Amino acid sequence: MRVEVDVPKCVGSGQCALLAPDVFDQREEDGMVVLLDESPPVELHDAVREAAVVCPAAVIRLVEQ
Amino acid sequence: MSPSDLQDFVLKRPVNAPLDPPPVYATLREGSPITRVSLWEGRAQPWLVTRWEDARAVLESPSFTVNPDRGAPWSLSEGVVQGSRGFFSMHDDPVHSLLRRTLTRDFLVKRIEAMRPGIAREVDELLTAMTKLPRPVDLVKHLALPLPSLVICDLLGVPYENHEFFQQLAEVMMDVTRDGESLAEARRTLAGFISEQMEAKRDAPADDLLSRVAAKVDEGIITASEAADMCSFLLFAGHETTANQIALSTVALLQHPDQIPRVLGEPADVANAVEELLRYLTIAHIGVQRAAVEDVTIGGVTIRAGEGVIIAIHVANRDPRVFTDPDRLDLERANARRHLAFSHGIHQCLGQPLARAELQIVLPEIFRRLPNLKIAVPMEEIAFKQDTKAYGIRELPVTW
Image 1 (tube, each protein chain N blue to C red):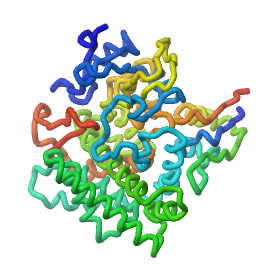
Image 2 (spheres, each protein chain N blue to C red; image 1 turned 120 degrees about the horizontal axis):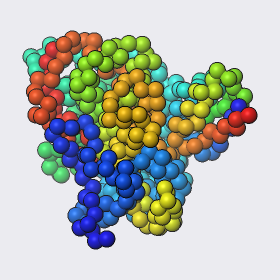
Image 3 (cartoon, one colour; image 1 turned 45 degrees about the vertical axis):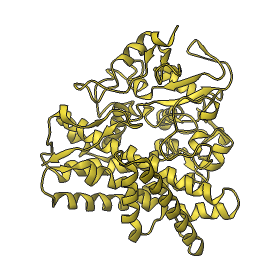
Image 4 (tube, chains in turn orange, red; image 1 turned 30 degrees about the vertical axis):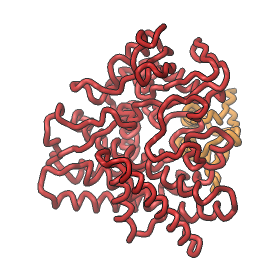
């Protein structure tokens, strides 16, 4: 799975950082998403998929391989 | 179709089902998922969206505006000055993002986590005071209302010695029996108080929201008046809403006593229980409003430029396509997190991590500290707030 984030669309809700903290973090100055791991291990895939669904601004794009 | 043929957009719930949306909406969701309804005795006929997928589609679409000046149907919130950029929930991007981003740093998941000990302390103090009062005690007045305003004080950085003053102002503004002039007076006093606090932060900046917002004013990103409006907005947005959710959650849990152990369990179980209570109760029962800025098709229906839309998030949160047995409160529900209680899209509630933290802390403590908690009046006599912008309870006499 490859993860992409469209940072300009992010509103800083932090749901992704809550659901998959090893994959997503928030920028200190404004809470915008920081992608920590663009190829997360398989045990994190469910959490990442959930983050993509609940993201309010549809920022997370997953390329499932 | 004439206005009189349309279903009225109603808020009132039957006495025997106060925690479910009015029954007519489930029928609409199944039969006419995107349909016109009548608002203000037919003076407006917005579209009503009731399915989860369609709700998200509208809220993710750039073809809609939140701005009442561009047709978004609902009346303005109390105390909101139309047009003020400080009330950024009524503005589209780029104004919305500009204003919102001055605050997102203070709502970082990490920062809210750091507030938990302070929230726990406030809960403890309020519950201790409650246990000393003669029973029955009004849970709304003594816990549900004061907690969120104290927490907002902490977030803003209002000094402890001003908490009582801030609390009293907040109380006046929540009081629906007050006349327009005394409410306006309270709002002016609040705006003045916030401005003074920001001035003090300039001389002695701290690691808090007021200091950061004061710095943005100095940088010329926002005006002092917009900053004061934003801080008032945070208070309005986070006070009665959270209080209502606390009170309603207490009632909902008491109606499902076999599930109360879940809120006394592991943090992950408590967190999931809170999500399910958010889904089940969805207090924003006037829905979320938008207007189309261009013709757009949602769920096969074409909504024309200028037409208003009400997204009934409380009804979408009971969509059987997403939530199995949706009208059942199930604190172990695996996909509870997919609820729309905080809405969706770029305007999704900024305060949600704070609301979650408060609920995750206060609900277990209520049941831990007040054993054999009971509501002191019959269910049919509980004063539910049927026609306020956020559904809730006016007073909740409890005993234990």
